[in-house]
Image (cartoon, rainbow, N blue to C red):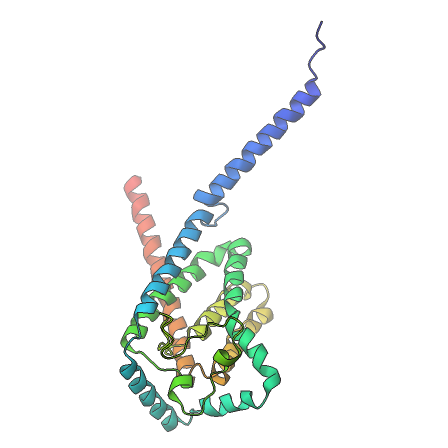
Length: 277
């Protein structure tokens, strides 16, 4: 005669099975439908990856007219001299006179994208209520900056200003900083605006948006990051003062574009809900 079934074990196995199925459904929902106000993870990865590939492809195609890039750089230098903000060469000389700061400057210049990805993930996980808004702003930067690169190629100071030392090329930890005639396929004539400053400013904007209600002082500190990047691109000979100003204009325009985008999406959703009703 077989022993009676252990009902306690059966109940535990049933509970574990139900829990596993709930976890699987939650994972599936997070990947393809979104959970707790967050967009679907898989959709976000695809959208951001396509945005990155779109930017990389069209950015590489722009800025091939070296004569125009040089002429635009000379014109920009004339404007800066008239405004008394032509400090690029002086800033570069200051860094070369302080060799202990060169390697930290190279790291700051190169690894800012780690902060970019980190801020994006942090907002997605911990501040889902603003994630879509700041992600739209990030994508708007990509879309709005490309026509500027196409219409206004610009030689950076390290190419256009005599005596400016190409700090990143000489001390590059990645060994891939492009130079004229290198044939790297990269766009090296897109100094206006500075995307290093633009991406860094986006990081500050995202952090400020997330923290301004709960931690207003900490939110203001986030803007130290793009200020540091602005100083970095000047002393390393990669951008002009007006490139940095252009990055500020780009961020403001992108925030406005993302806001309009959000209103249009909301209007479309309301219209769609009315049709269904």
